[in-house]
Image (cartoon, rainbow, N blue to C red; front, side, top):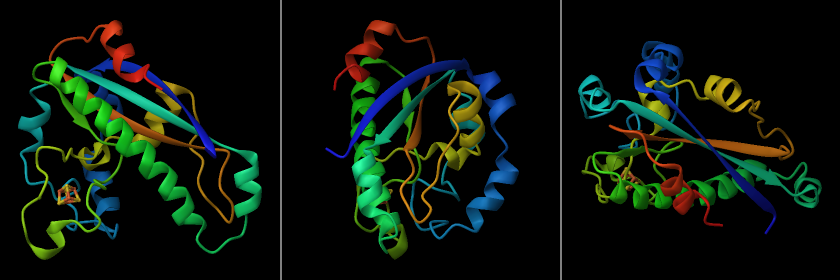
Length: 198
Ligand code: SF4
């Protein structure tokens, strides 16, 4: 494999998460300029009442996956035309894996819900583009940034990691931040069962 992944977990009271790391109005402005706006069910405009949805939870767990890329891969792909696709394929695989793990955790934590890192990528093309309902509502999870949570700030403040981006070459690492909202705190043992795997 051309990369390795390390996962970090922190949690905050929901109230603190919202006061310090949510700016819905500003973020929605960015979302409106995104090609995924109104095209993917996990992304804005959300078809749920956001206040009612978030109001159900007392704790926000944050799972930061740091994806360290091999220097050989970085060198061999530098300057290639599809550099963004190479980066996205790696992030996409890590995101799908973590989505899967967190859905398993939901089953052990009553009343919990996962917020996925970025837009849903379960289907090749989202049904929203054709005006149809989500075809995998049991698996789809809303994107954490769709609620206006400031991922760059969270990654820097909570995990002490500066986000890196693809330029004409891959960065040393990517980061993905998933959310996991709960009514009660989750034991470390349960987390290590899910995140400690591979
Ligand atoms: S599961 Fe498929 S249809 Fe549903 S939001 Fe994700 S990509 Fe769209």
